[in-house]
Structure formats: structure tokens, C-alpha cells
Length: 299
Image (cartoon, rainbow, N blue to C red; front, side):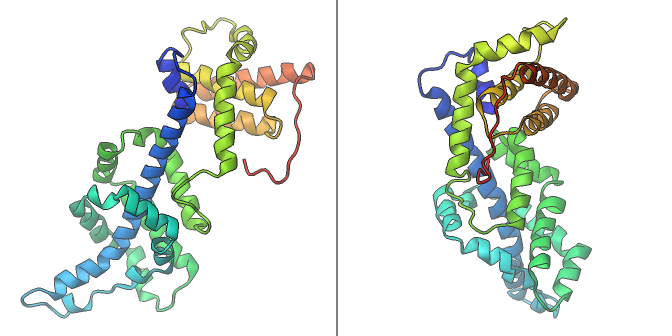
């Protein structure tokens, strides 16, 4: 969607292969943001050791300074992430440490240690996968994302943060719930990458077909005055109806309603819902929609 919007802003004047190049670049930008978010979470957790060293090295450390609880630095999920080979490779490649704000990191850590959730975490003597995951999720959801300084920090270093924020939120949570077999060097599986490329190229090459179906449904709407993103979303939906046999039509409609709500205007969700539903009924009545079920598909 973002790639198609970028191409639309270029008045569709793209060279052969350029569209896929833009898509690849956007996927890479998302990979960088995702890696940084995970890296920042791990650094907040590991800061307990830095805090302990600094306080123990005071000229006259107190008993409290000498007894900083560093349980979270040994968080089992934390170390599973840190020791994962693709994470190591990606961190070495992207060097997120070069852009991290140490004062912001310290601030988030201090908010963590003063929270009731953290105190409950360190008081529990045993470790279990749920509490190990929950405390890292707490850092992300309750400390990083609500912090205005952190969001400003992301916007400063990642110009596409606003576009990716919702997706990144879900991706990070999914990762923390099921981190095994995740490849940081390529956040998309080959199947999903091929699907994205195929959908992009289909929308671009089948514009005339999709617009022939969309324009009659606009009634009193002027296609030139409708939000450009709404038209892109509608074209994507129509192309999935007609040319992607493994995607159920209900899934297509629901997904594009959500995209319209999240990325376009206030009225876009209802607008896209009405038009896609209308087009779907017409195509179904004419037996122009053919769907197959492939149980092994992960798209």
C-alpha cells in the first residue's frame, strides 16, 4: 500500500523494476525500525547491570547501592534474543548502538524499576516463560510507546515511523509471544515477499480492469476527488478478488477496511466497506470470483 501510494505521488511514472525496488526499500526500512525496537527493549533490561556497576563504584556506596537487583539482566527471553544468530548479525550490520539515546535509555529504565510490575517481577524467586515475556512486553507497551521523548526519538531517526507504527506494535508483540525461528536479516518469509511483489505488480498492471469496476460504484463521487489512498486500497481489494485465488473474499474486505481506518480518512473505513462489498456481490453474481483453499499457505 505504501509503495503504491509512493508511485501514485510520482504520477505513476516509474521505470521497469522500479516499483519492486521501492517495495524492497520499504521492507528494509521496516526491518530497521523493528530491529531497533527489539534492541532498545534488550538494552533497557540489561541496564540493570550498568546501574549496579555505577552505584557500586561510588566513593561511598550505600547498602542499597551495593545490592541492586539485576534479575532482569538474566531474563531468559532476553538472552534468547541476544544470542540468536540473525539478531547478532543484524545488530552488527545496522549498529543500533550508534543512535541510541543513553539518557532516554536511563529514563525508561528508571521508570521500570519504580513500577509495581518490576517490583513484583524481582520479588519472584523463580523464572517462568510467562513472567519473563511479560516484563519485556511491559517495557515496550507501558514505558517505551507511551513516552513522548521515545516517540520523538524514533521519528528523528526513522522517517517512516508514523507509517509503520501500528504494524511495528503488532510485530513486536507477536515476536515476544513467539520469538523462535524469527529471522532478523529478512523479516518476511519468501512466500510473503513473493505475495507482496505479485500484489504490487498486479495492481499496477490491472489498473484499467479494477477502475472499470470501481468507477460505476462511486455514484455521485468524483474519482479524482476521492482520497488517493482510498482508491489504492480499493484497487488492491479488487485485485485480490479477481487474481489471488487463495485469499478468501471476507479476509480481503476486512483487511482493507482496517487499512482504510488506520491510514486514510475518518470516513474511509465505511466507504471502502461499502464499495468492496458492492463489487464483491456483483462479481459473485457474475461468477467471476474463483477461490481455492491451500491449507499450507501462510499468507
